[in-house]
Length: 223
Image: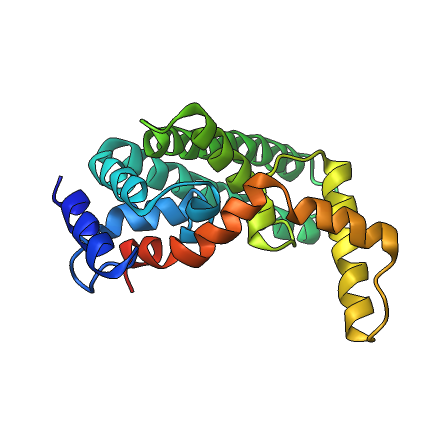
């Protein structure tokens, strides 16, 4: 595959960052990757190399039928969301209308179904993107993707945690930021927990990947 050779040459000459224009830009694949949560940061923290990301984007570029399915399911969600909003407005003008209430109930069911189908379409494309990855990397990518909206530094997204553990970590980080902002000492128990989190093997590896691998992966996503 041409992309692999170009990246390999770039690694030899310049480290991990390809020369501009050497890596083929795959716009359809990039758009879909972002839609299903596979941003450059997620892919980097998820443990992928630039070569693996290039291969994943190529698979997404070739998955035309699944991309079309995603577009269709997203359109369905937009359609039924609009329908629900319209019926809610109508219900305000016709409070207590049994007919409108029934139509609204049906529209909500259709919206729920459409969202489930959209989730399935995203999952199918994520499976295509992760094809060929080792079990450990695929699992780390899934964990990172599911945690990508957590309000913690990106390198901490790669560790699987319970909801309670996430809440504690997020709260500890808030305490740390407030203490540092006011030039106070971070409470010892908070400092210890955060030090333990930051010294996890996966977190250390993710931090290094952000420094060294992320630029090459961002280059694959184009301007």
